[in-house]
Length: 176
Image (cartoon, rainbow, N blue to C red; front, side):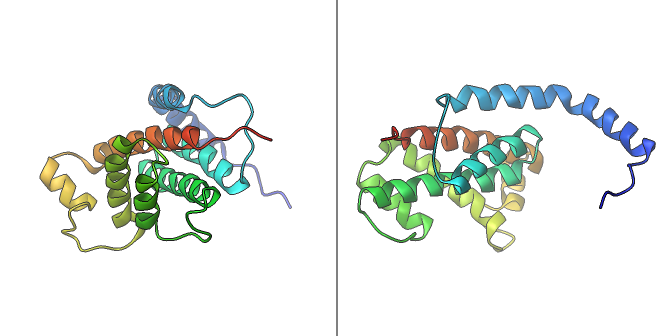
């Protein structure tokens, strides 16, 4: 069943917003493109590939908390699968355990792990309710850094996008 067409006033407002945000979206498309460096064709788990693309889309459209949450999910998917393929575990342990094992077994370059751990710490207050004064919570960081929450999340999201693509590319395997 089709719903009624949207009113012209709504379409006009959407066109105004498209014009207003077009430049910033274009800049974020270019930013994500600098980090992606994907091969022309990839195969993998449907969930991981869907999350990878959806993370790019929410980032491009300026949904930075969602970008951070989804990018960390992609990173977790990639690391869990890589560790499973290496026989380090069979199930999916907590992400902190995955990061420790992946670091111990040199799944990724060692210098990536401090930033990956920081991204997880910054994601956690968004994913799990924490105290208002939690060190990695947005309220605490806003007061400490004296920056707007949107600017903080935008920077976190860009870092998360960069590491998401790094981890994804580092764990890609050639099809047999």
